[in-house]
View (tube, rainbow, N blue to C red):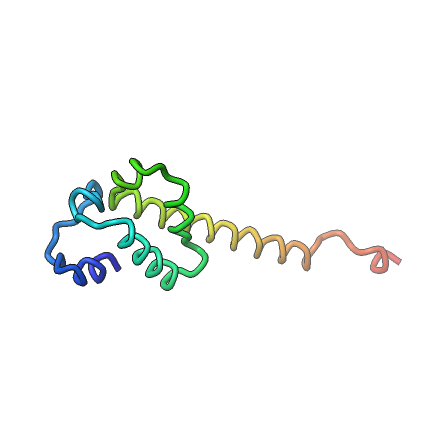
Length: 107
């Protein structure tokens, strides 16, 4: 996704590493991050809310944002969603397969 965004700015050959910054290294502005946020939302849906992540940062943190921080945020968001989904599935399974008989089953 990032490569596609960078290609729009003629930066498709830019070197990208975890420590690459969006602002200083890639010279992307906040509006470009909005575009990236939209691409992430389109790809991952509600599982990755990059706009909320950015909204929680101070201006200097946004300016210093690195590729690694974005990757970590996406991975953490997907893991949290997977954990929540697994917990929800377990809760549903436990509710339908309870080892304790209901009062009508005991009679």
